Amino acid sequence: MRHALITDVHGDLEGLTTALRMIGEHDVDRVISLGDVLDCLISSRSRGRRLRSLDQVTVWSPAMEGLLEDVLLIRGNQEERIAGHLPGDAVPAEVARLLAAPDSHRTDFATYCHGHLLSWTNPLPDLWCPLHEDFPGVALVYGHHHRNALFEVPRGRRTWSATREVEITSGVPIPLDRERRYLVNVGPARGPSPSWALIDETASTVTYHCTQSRYKD
Image (tube, rainbow, N blue to C red; front, side):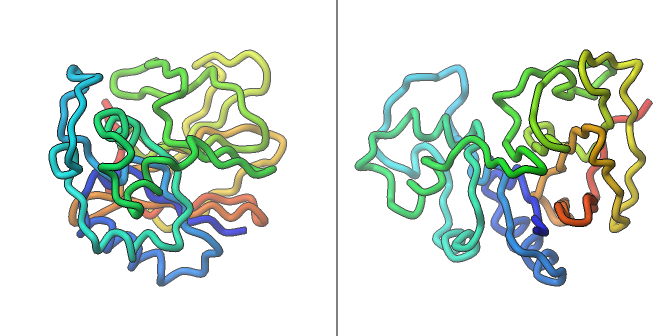
């Protein structure tokens, strides 16, 4: 299976359209959204505040419904926050599908999730990775951090000194050793130059198509 991965659209219809158009130029079996398709307009400090209208909580474009029709959806923290501010009868069916999406998708090869529910560590400035998170298979694939990064982590007890950051070149497949474990951080699909990634589970490769990169000192 070849999975195209997008994440962190944050309501940017243009970014979503551009990313899906680029993905359409490649041979993929499925598109997976890793969450935060929408953006919650209510501050996270206002947890529990109840409203009656969708447009009070987020900006929804009906065009997104068609774009996401065949996309496997995973719920992000923005979707969780939006759902927490609205009663069910205030959510249109096409948006309810986003808000009620599962928090992960698992295959024998990888676990795909948004990332907000993972345990994060920050070994270097702005690095932030789920270094100690346990997962089955070869890869843990996530967004949330708005960066492109790939880490090869040791089996068993993990330390930053034993972790290798793998160099990324946009458009170039990176082989993933099935005897090792990887943290696959996918950059955001928003803005005029969105990022996305392709995981080929059969070939055991990941290819980043990216314009965003993490902080480097």
